[in-house]
Length: 551
Image (cartoon, rainbow, N blue to C red; front, side, top):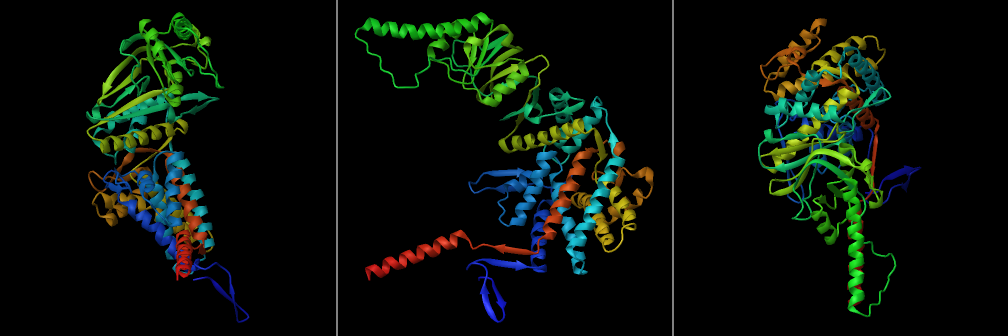
């Protein structure tokens, strides 16, 4: 149906044939319905007792996870508002790496509360205005209540990492994984102009199925997923002097087509000997520098392999650029673009370089680097899906620790900070004039959905839990009380050591409010006609023309 407007009794065609349009309250309600459907889908995954989702893609590959960002990324959503909800999760994941489910659930709840206000004929703009004020107040409460953490307080950092993994497949071993995460992040953290900078990309995560979760290990160095190029080379080198080459150990081919005319076998032999001599000189230069391990980003000629093996040098070829950069950060070596530039100063060091077999694959381990700024976590697990979920859990823990190092403030988990913000917002609502006051109260109700969902997912009575939680928060000394999913009821999250980075909560509230506000502001949806239908129409016309010709 094309959109038609009546102008003085004459119909005016505005949109193309096949386009559709929804306007006014109908558009807002449709958008809210879609956003809530996405929110409800992942709501059951929230918290330590949350359930997992199984997602099967078009190729039949299975993903089993309760990570909000992963679930939404794997879901092939079509509606534009559903895609916006996926963006909410991605924004949360990229910025702080955790709290994706919280951000999406909060967006859905804000829209659910907004729908009740719309039914009372409150304009979307007033709701958005109230939500913005409530968001600023909520972020202010987080800043006031956040507990400062010393960067050397390893025990608290472990608690933060452990909390982020409570809802994951590795929950039973969270203390072991938390220790790995804290060590890894502290190792790669750097201080620049008084600020701590942590790039999680400097922590290499290698997944290999087989073994148990407890076989997961932190390596103060790098694992290169390649094998030693020549069987005669040493498979283990202690006190390694490492050369990193971004140049081929091959005789360079000319850029233009060149022809060499040879008239006798002697000339042919001289030509081959000259090539061999060039390769031998390259290897001699490497040997003279004192290098006994070579990682090459490009190829290594068979003849060069022979000379390297004879010199007792361990060599690996076609190493990924990202791995080369990590090796440089870990070993202190310089990446050289010409073999001629090699010198003892350009070499890196490691206590041990060894080829090992992991899950039927040979890999080269570079271990014991002095103060490496790039480290590796080798993740093991019984089967592929378990290893994938363990990797996601470790990434959440790494991001949680990195967030605290960058912004050293934490808040109690278990819905405690949400309950405290809700209490403060209800007080603040009395200071807000007009109908925006109702929007601020609605914001408080939406925040309470987090502890309510935690209780529901743990099989507790949400009404009783929220009543107990609200009562506890009336006492200022009990502001850290949250939902105790293990024993039922409410308990002090601070004494239980359940902490989350303040930046995760702050960003979740910010991104959820912005997304909800954007969806509420949409009052007209105009969809262009589908490309497929146009193609089919064109195809039908062409077939009709062909038939008429044959007639």
